[in-house]
Image 1: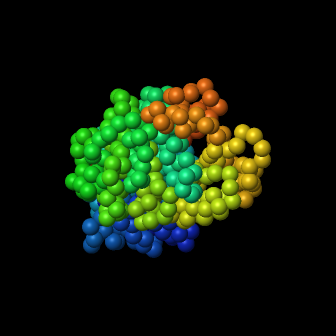
Image 2: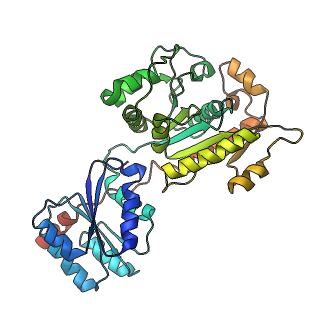
Image 3: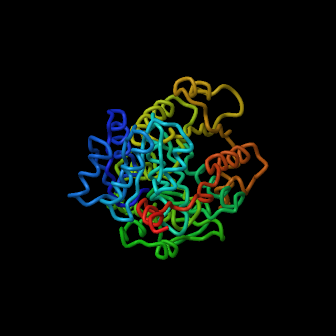
Length: 398
């Protein structure tokens, strides 16, 4: 998520204006103010003689390298040292890129660019403000009631915590959730208590609300007695997710089936989404509808992963994996075979990947968990670049 910053984009073409508009509507820029202006460096220089500069300036420029450097110097005279600059041009020249970054340009992008290209560049500048890296948020939602989305979420959380040795928080966001029963514990506090705290919730308070099963896996459980009068508001839900990803390396969101403002907010705040379907026609219909809705909600993100759960091991199912792939135009991320041992494991307060780890179902769940976790995106990031004008001033002083 981008912080509360101001970004001015100076465009000379309609294509870049459209890109900037898509970035402004992206879920990661919900707190960011983005304004689009016509023109290039001259218009930017004229503007900041009379207006306060933003945190980031994005300028489209197709001039010669010598003119470009002169324009950057002139713009630096109008802005404070904390301002960053992204230049968008048409010259695919590594020497030019190196020269611009040496004099303080935060990034140089070559057209044509996609919204995600510009967004990634902005995130690389402002997304490193936290001393501790942010965790990855994985959301799980069923295409219909009884699809087994919670079971899969629980098994994914257990696998990531144990196999990847990563701190993992499972948030049971279903008011009638079963995480406490699944992992065999009782705790009077949990998800609703965190929601009630709203903006007052911090990492330390959240840590006290979590039931830590071991050093790797924590669970924020649904209440023992659901409060039907409490509907999570979007701001509190978003704040909870932001605090959770500051506390652990992975956050697993177990969401109820449906489409409400707060569920949409949870999906918007997630890095990856898994839709859990079953081999029947109503589930296929709902899966297609949910996929379309999520794509509209997250236009610059990858589409949700589709998991076909409880696939019969014998006989022909009403709707096969091939049917899903043909109608949705996508391959299944995983096909989980039906296993009667799943219910037995749940009754014993254990997940299947722990109770019968060598079964075909447990193996499929374990492989899918690692697939959802992907490479570790919480490490290996480069340090945040310095402000444009700090570098320019340092060069002048040298």
